[in-house]
Amino acid sequence: MSNDHTKSDESAVRNALHRLDFGTTEAKVLVGLHRLGTATARDVSRVTDVSRPQVYSAIEGLEQRGLINIQQANPKQFQPVSPDETAALLRRTFDEDIELVADHLEGLAAQRDGPDEEREDMWTLRGQEAVSERIVQLIEEATSRIVFGVQDEALLTSQIVQGLRDRSRTDVDVLVLTFSPAIRNEFAADDTITVMEPREHMGRRDHMGRMLLVDHETVLHSMLGDEELPGLQLETAFWSSGSGFASTFIAMMDHFIDENLGH
Image 1: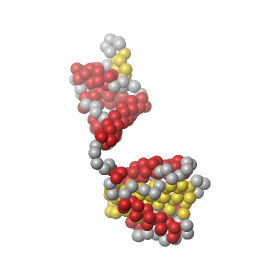
Image 2: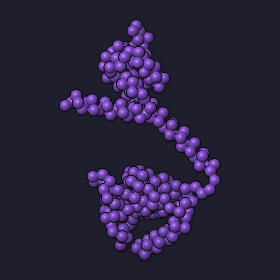
Image 3: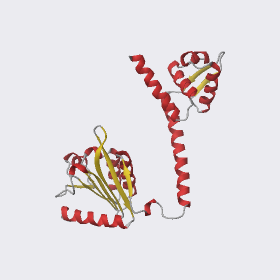
Image 4: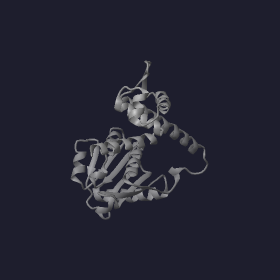
């Protein structure tokens, strides 16, 4: 049972390495070297069922990535760098590739004609992770005010909490609207964040997701639907910035805030 579990783990690791652009042989040799510590090509071949010529070819590729050290002995000895160093090297390569792609796409977006995403009327997001990422991004872009409404503490991620705190320590006014005692307690020690409970809720509370107003031009609102995974409801959000739709919705929300909070 334990051996089957180990094989399953190693298969998952090799699949992950494939997604990180490792060939099948490179993935097997890297995992084999970490199992052995220091080994010859014969040793690696024995534990991986990879022929020695293929082992040497894989080792050449792994050395170029900085993932192994070679001891010039007879026969040669091969040793992987530490797991932490391996993770750091892979993460650095991954981050550099993402930055390269993002920079190129931004350049292409700047060159195209016509309206960009920010000028469109409304955009839709699906899934809690995607909605959370957009909320964090919009919070980071705030320059004057943030109004964030949430009822379910499971939807208040640590990144959102930190983003609200960071912006509140600048010249940005931050207001959190919630019925949840747990969420109110989360911000109880934050003198720079105002937390209030509306006198009445808008719509059915069990379907409410998250609401965000940023400055006086950007709005995001989400609703919860059927379960996406067991215990995880599907969240769908729309957001808009600098549009007539956003202006109308923000005016409605400002009126609601004034009416319910006595402003």
